[in-house]
Image (tube, rainbow, N blue to C red; front, top):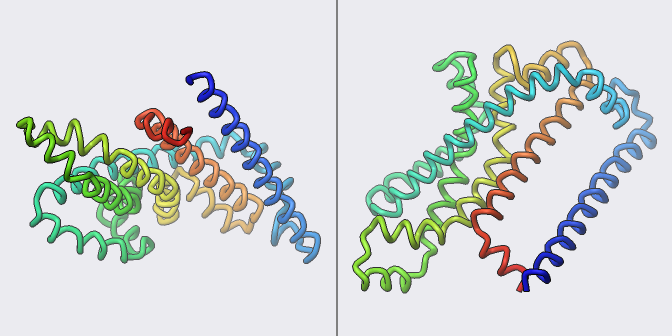
Length: 263
């Protein structure tokens, strides 16, 4: 059975890689087609080749900026996970916390990020801490809501079974609620991972000395669209990398979900 499962997994990964190659090929093809049909000059819409040249030429500079953005995005994502799971636990354990906190979560999500980021910058300055808090604000809602829904989706029958054995509240969470809600928590983390880099970049737009947002601001002021597109591609790569990292963590932490998919 293990051999069959490994074969299926390898075949699935091969097909997934092929789908990504075809998707990227289609994107580049459409990009070239738009440039050719509408005759856009490079200063309006640079070609993928021109963007690739910037990525190669400015590799060292972009790596320096990307390292700062990745640090801010990762730290903000971790902070959002800690706070989000903690708030979800409190909402699940205490009904009065749920009644007070859930409407506030919805209201916070309705606030535009572009309005929150300047306030955070004013309060905490232009250092990395402000960007980390902006990222945490962006990622907090999907993590909290998915974690809470994961806790709430646990079957009452399993809870009653543990109660018959005299399980404590900590034992119920350790052996039932947390394992059962892991898919939901990590699903929210995957969504948050795609937002984290964007949150860091928006924070860097408003001020700082390092980061992809700073690089983009300087490129915009010098009317270098090729560098702007290179920065956009780099943001996409970092977001994809964090997404795949969370996805790999999900496969490691919930092996029963992967086995269920092969049945």
